[in-house]
Amino acid sequence: MKPAAQQNDNAKLSNLESQRKCLVTGERLQKTQMLRFVIAPDGTVTPDIEEKLPGRGMWLSAIGDVVKKAERGSFFARSAKRKVILPENLTGRVEALLLKRCVSLIGLAVRSGVAVSGFEKVRIWLKSKPSGVIIQAFDGAEDGRSKIRVLARNTAVLTALTADELGQASGREHTVHMVIGPGGLAKKLKLEMTRLQNIRQLILKDDDDKRQDE
Image 1 (cartoon, rainbow, N blue to C red):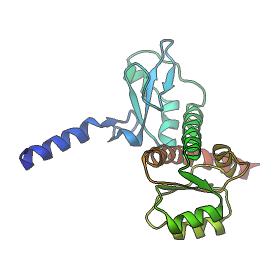
Image 2 (cartoon, rainbow, N blue to C red):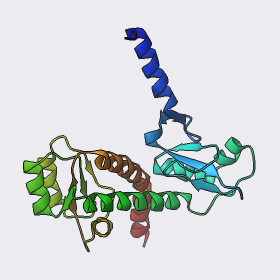
Image 3 (tube, one colour):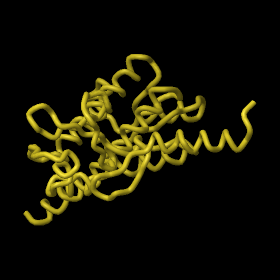
């Protein structure tokens, strides 16, 4: 059995190895809180949401205003030490990829039988079964959403999707409430939807500002 001091050192080393430094803020965070980018052969900055693309990774905090700032500056070029091509609306591309990832994971959960949707089904589930994560459409009626949150107890409630997007993911036209049972899928969804939620904070705010200007 390893001494306690060595175990602590190993834990600290493991924690450090799973961290990356944000190009914009300089802050070191867990990779789960960040977004990886690579430079494609043609020099284009490319989001690597699933962290599988070849090449040296460059990392940003998974926060909308951080990605927006990276779009407008020379952070990627300085890190790569070369000229790079920044695609238009990089934040929007990141959002679209995260949304696609979330929709895919929700669809898998539905097909696997570990998820139900609809107010009454979710309410019954929360009263009788353990839950991994609760998903609510942010544009759903607050009355119903608040009733589900009361039953959530310590289960994470994520609100990154619209009712149409959640409906698309669950195979229905319009969905406000969904619960997914505990397990690997729930953990992955919590990670990806949290990143999407953080990216969308700024995008949704921008949309609100535009509507107020009209």
